[in-house]
Structures are given as structure tokens and as C-alpha cells.
Image (tube, rainbow, N blue to C red; front, side):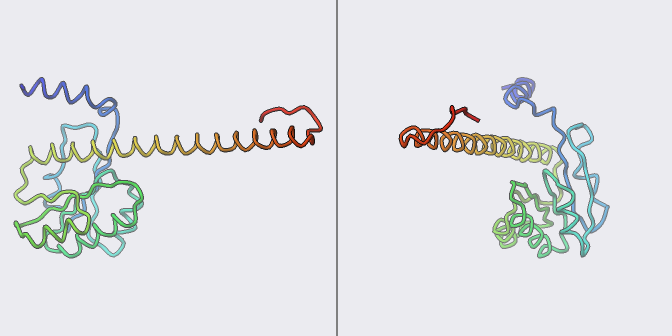
Length: 186
């Protein structure tokens, strides 16, 4: 399949995909790698940079991101702690990507156990990164759509339950003969 055909297929399969703006938070020790993770060609991404600090967890919560990059190679343990915090404190799906300096199998396993959705090794291939980000955000978008549908179904279920209870109460009044005025549904 040609690259153009693949791109066209992708747009058709992802309705509304290009209409949404995603917020990507990049947590790092320094600003030296900041441009490494940005895709300036995409109008769908808004970036926020956070530095390692004592208030980082509160900043992450208030940022309401759609994707988090943890670029803390000198503080891999901190990155794992932050990842764990994100995964345990957010009820919605929030993809987290850890950036690692070296291919250390033990650290990879710890990161995945902490809830990392992906691990990218330096040096970062921008082309690969672009597609990994796109795929994670697509999963996030699908998860958000599913959660919206679940909320709608729960609301419809509550409404049906109310109607069923109202109808049951009306039927009981008819059976017992205690209906004093004409019944009108709410």
C-alpha cells in the first residue's frame, strides 16, 4: 500500500480525528530536549512543559493532558513514581511515555509495571515518535468516546429505571384501587 493511500485510509478510519486538539505535557529536568518531542507540523497538538519540582503532581493534575512524556533520564525512579501516580490518580485513560537513555531491561520492566504505555530510547527517532504519539492519542480518543457512550447509557438506564418505577407505582394503585385522580406520566 502506498504512503498516500495509507494516509487517506487513516483519515477515513478516524472521523473527527483532525478536529480535536490534544494537549501533550512534557516533564523534564532541563529544556535542552524540548524541541525533540514537538511536532510543529501538527496543528492538533498543544504542548506544555513542566520541570521536575516538588509541585509536579499538582501541576500534572491541573494541566489535564491527553498524553504525558516523562523525559527524566537522570531520575528514572522519579519517572516511575510519577507514572504510578498518574495511573492511580486518574480515572480516565491517560497514556504515559517514558524516555530512557539506555536499553536497560530491568528499568523497562519497572516502567511497564508502574503503568508506562510506551518506552522510547534515546536518541529519539522523530519519525517513529510521530507515529507512536499519533497511535497513543488515537487510543486515548477512542477511550474518551467509549467513556462518553458509557455515561450516556448510564443516564438512559437511570431514566428507564425512573419510568419503570413510576409505571409500577401506577399499576399498584390500579390493582389496589387507591388511584384517586387520573394518572399522568411525568
